[in-house]
Each structure stands twice: as C-alpha cells, then as structure tokens.
Image (cartoon, rainbow, N blue to C red; front, side):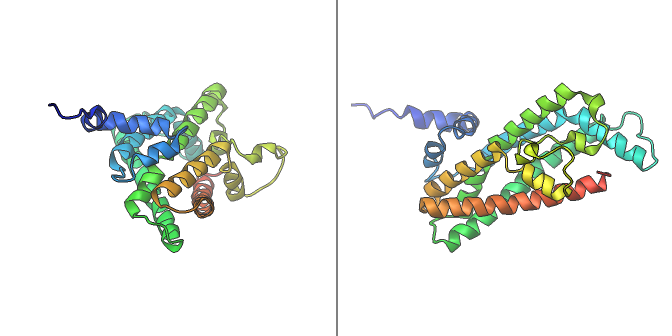
Length: 247
C-alpha cells in the first residue's frame, strides 16, 4: 500500500520563490487565503527579496527622471552636473543597496507599529507575523511605482523642470484647484490617501484578522492607525527631501 501523495507540499518546498511570487500576486485579490497559508509558518525573507528586486528595477527605470532632477538641483546651487554622473557602476550599486534597505527599514518599522497595536489589543501575534502582514502589502507600492513610471514616460524627461514635476499623485489633492497653496507635507499627505493605499490598508486589516486573531473592528482600527502614522512619517521625510532639493 503506497503512502498518500502530497503534491502541494512538494511543490512549495521545491519552488519557494515561485510560491511566494504567486502569493504576492494573489494577495491583491485573495488576501485572506494568502495569509491563511502562513498561519503556521509565516514568511518574510523570500517575498522581501522578490519585492526588493522589483523595487530596484522600477527605480532604475526612473533613473533618467531622477538624473534630470539632480541636474536642476545642481544648477540651482550654481554647480554643474559631472559628465556621466548617474550612470556609473557605483551609482547602480548604491541604488541597489538603497532599494533593499528602503524596503527592509520601512517593513520593519511598520511591523513594529502593528505589533505594538496588536499587543495592546490582545492579539495572538508575533513580530514575524506582522512582518508577513506588511511585506504582502508591498505589491500595491510596486503597482504605484509602475503607474508613476508610465505617467512620467508619457510626460517625457524634458517636462521635468522642478522636483515637483517628478511628483505623480493619485490622491484627493488632484481635486483641488491648481493654484491652491499648501505645504509640501500636506500635499504629500493628501497624495498618500489614494485608492492603492486604501487597498493596501484593506489587505493589512485582513492580515491582522487572520494572523493576529483579532476582531474586524480591532483589525481595522490598527490598520488605520498604522496607515496614518506611516503616511505622516513618509510625508514628513518626503517634504524634507523636496525642500532640500529646492522644491
């Protein structure tokens, strides 16, 4: 008598990166099922690596636009951009390291916020589970980068005349009159309340319900608080960077 076959387990064990890549796609439409698969063994490092590679690739696609902004900043400071700057091997290495660290640090901080919130609400959770919840919301950030690249490509590099021309919003600030005066922080904060970000908040809430075993109300409360905190921090850092570049 032969033992029962377990093809699904064998497939997962043999192709872990393919499995996690599939989860990163499926989580957009079936977050509950994706998180349920990881209740016993939450995963972070393999999907993190996949997200990092894709994030790095998207940043490199936007390199011509970033180089243009650097040229404008140098010109405003009365300096000339060195020939070949932004295209050397060192630039790509630094860009790659920055991409990996960006995803890691942002994921770690957001997971820490969620862990504290879940601990305060009595959730049955661990920090690793919160890392799992966070990393599987990153496909929305990748999708936003794709849309940003498409918009910038349609505009063309020659349309970049200030740091704000690199800014592509999908948030409620689009409904304000073009001559509305607001601080960089407020503009970035409003831009962060986009359909994609709200979609990510929904995925976060589902992940908390599944992995932290909390009620829908607690999950949504934690997801909203975490969203607002990370949005405020991101807007603050972005506003500082824009001002530093003359925006």
